[in-house]
Length: 488
Image (tube, rainbow, N blue to C red; front, top):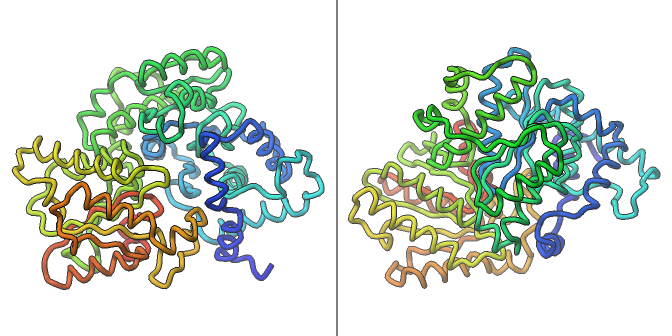
């Protein structure tokens, strides 16, 4: 091992990524993992020196769902940080955060190599033949997070499920304080080849005996399954989030009408958590601390407006939407209220493999049409964007990724020929045959896309850029465009 720096840790972590072929095999299983996932994760946990029951000391709020789970975690994080006076409150999202701030590179490297060394030292203790010497990327990061939080002796942990619920690696926690389920997205039914009932069964796997189980309103088929599973798993109570008038009446820190539902779920999760600690009792009105928490919640890359610090005439609208439903929410947010005079719009979009570019972009255009009509605009979706750019999910123009953003999930042949981007461009032209071909661009990297925007800025006119299609894309753009200080 050449070194033990943050960069060394990231390089080693990237060796644990699944390649495109492996991800396709996982997708063939419905994307929900398998029943061996939990026993394997328990073995890894024991090999780094912890028992499953040790995780109960983290006081976990466990959240799953098809869409909105990350937003819900962000709201809960913001609310509880206003109520806890002790220094350690954590949220596991894309990164390991303490008090709402990612842990330092030095701490990440320390905890990363603690786990790496323990797994190396206990390689001969491997019991399950299906388990590899080291877990894959997401499981490994989860182990690092658990190790970090146990070492730091945190007071509360907001834990977001990765995929599914029942067989997700985060579901080794024996007894969280409270569990929550955000919306079950209908668009995932076709993608995963699962019914709403099957998806609900997976998500409800995080329910635990004696622990409150909370959900937002769901499609009838899904709600029936959630109720059944809560009874089977002996949850202490099953609650459907009631309307919270105060949430709808304030300007939430996370933009978009869809966040009202997530905010309501966050309120109830926070209340149940605090009640379990004897720190609050039910109140008729929402406390001011909750309201301020909802107002101040932040979550980079989701319905986020960023003024470019180096190019004052450029405004970036960032949203990592990557499903049909989340794209519809993205457009609704972007056009509420309707921006003023739109001089230049550029749509950066990375379509998830397996989704049709025609339907993916069709939703964008349909939603634009609906929002324009709603706001009384005579503008046509055909002319709403001046230019569109479909770029590969590669960070830099030289073909390299920023270490933290390295992705092995893109097939090499697809990347070399820009297959996905070409398909999206063809779909766009098919949907809008009158859109000027010279204004549809396929570019090989995020840096190329940012350069295209910078070129437009040099013409001296305001530039408004809607960037969407992938959280990985948003992260790369924040890096390349130099937006870290204002966006993160």
